[in-house]
Every structure is written in C-alpha cells, then in structure tokens.
Image 1 (tube, rainbow, N blue to C red):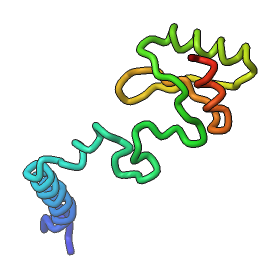
Image 2 (cartoon, rainbow, N blue to C red):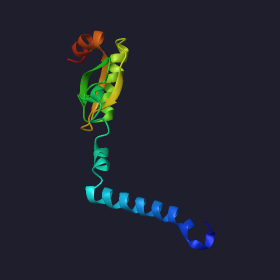
Image 3 (tube, rainbow, N blue to C red):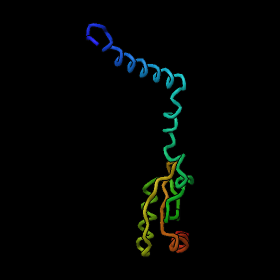
Image 4 (cartoon, rainbow, N blue to C red):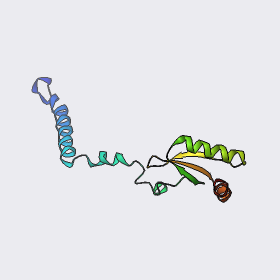
Length: 109
C-alpha cells in the first residue's frame, strides 16, 4: 500500500472519532460519576457512620477549638489521654479511648 493512497490516515481518524464518540456519550450521561465526589466516603462501609473515630470515643463535643483545648488540658491533668477530632458538622469532638470514656465524662461534670 503506497502512502499516496491516503490509507495511512485511516487509523488516526478512527481513533479521533472514537474519542469524540466517548466524549459525547459521557456528556449525555451527565458525568454522574463526578457528582459523587461530594461525599468521598459514602461508598465505603468502614466510614458509614459519620461519627466513627475507630478506637476512640467522643467524650465531649464543642463548637470552638478553644473550648476543646480547655477540655483536653483538664483531661491531661487527670492523666487521661485525649485528642481532637473534627466532625462532619464542623464541631470539635474531644476523643478518648473507650476504657477511659466514663472517667473523662465524670471529670467534666
């Protein structure tokens, strides 16, 4: 096959047509797979509960990080290890291990 016949353009033209066809198909479908990016953990069962912090439990929930730090300092003075976690609603959770949860809540009363 001689290059002057024009058949050497057939492969690239087919590739361009297929890419264009796929673009139209995805555009018509509305790219619904991109809309799932709002909730990145929605499909994972290990993150099904929005307040699941694994081995840690929420001893207190506050609106400001300063209040949460004050609670953490109070718990640290009593020898209870704690950390901060940010909930999905934007509030701060003071997290402790499950075996120290009751002692932490009694201390904060």
